[in-house]
Every structure is written in C-alpha cells, then in structure tokens.
Length: 102
Image (cartoon, rainbow, N blue to C red; front, top):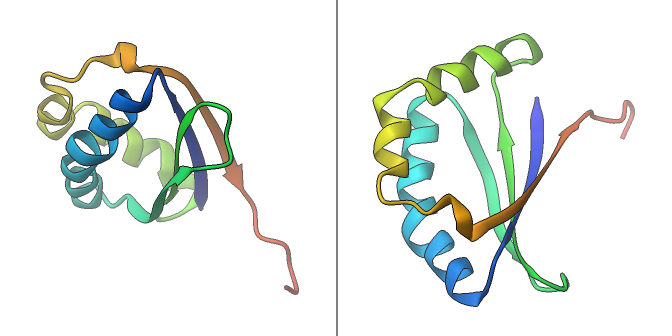
C-alpha cells in the first residue's frame, strides 16, 4: 500500500527546517516501524512551500496498525520533541491504488 502525503509549510524557513531537521530523524523512526519512505521531494511548482512524501506500508490491512504503533511510540515523541506543529498549515493524504496491467 502506497500513500502520497503533501505537507504545506508556512514559509521558506519552515520548509528548510522541516526538510533538514525534522524529516531526517522522522525517516529513521518510520523505517523502524515498517513504514518505507519511497521518496521525499519539495514541490517547486507549488504556489506555497510544499513537501511531498511517498510512503509505503506492508499491506492494506496493516496500515492502520503500523501507523498507530508509530503514533503511540517513544519514537514519535522523540521525533516531535521541539517540533512546532504551527509551521505545517495543511496536510493532504492520498492512498494510491495500482492500475492493473500497467
């Protein structure tokens, strides 16, 4: 199962901090919880400051269990220590389904 997540940040400094400070430690923790990061990008065509993440989960049925496990872990608490959630003004999520035969 693949999820496309788009995070809109408040300004250029928030984008820099989000990609250089938060995501590196976040990525290590996600991997420990069986959440695979397929890629992380800055959307340079967006009007605002956006980060796009493509993440994968072991299976459809395991997604919520895996996410809940991470959200209730000490890894989550450590990832978010000192993190200002106010720098993220919007989050969009899309679960992607493969097209058969392609």
